[in-house]
Image (cartoon, rainbow, N blue to C red):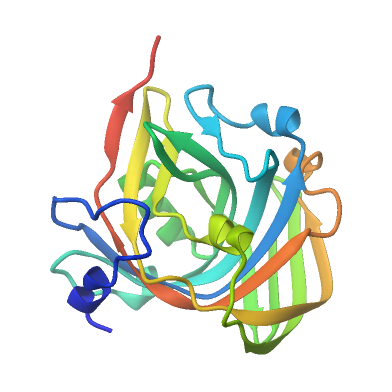
Length: 242
């Protein structure tokens, strides 16, 4: 699908596309979404005070998303696969800021050290390197510095043609809000609605000691998508109160 075709499919968005020119293209492929219902008060400890935790039927959620980033590039420049393509895991929650609903990353890991360094420098997102391996129906990650470990085996089923309101609430997010020492940075993104397949887990290990009060049991809900092409705009910085 061309970029213009992607931009013209926008009726599913909760607000209009930005007026400014987009800055980055990327693909989020073969994405596994693991979702947990969590205690609001516990989650509040991990989220900046400037961000309101978004709730679905009065319930807070945290998700681990494991996927493969591909073809990430700036506008008008080609992708460079040794840097542009890498596996990624993010742990995110759902927030609102300036009347827009989006996501906030508790953690972001990438499977290539140089890619993490560049992404962190350009975006101020909290990228860090972890050793990752992916093969058919299997995904692993480990980080000795944080004592983190993730392992997942799964198999896929049929396409999902009817999504629940919760399915869409957890996956269809078109803004990212992230804190830096001096600002809350906002990023707008756009893609078509996530296509989904049935997924069944064969085995799972999620060991993130920092988030043990959030990810301390089997996920409440899971999703799989073959992926989306993503258009992203430059960050907008909002200075934090002293």
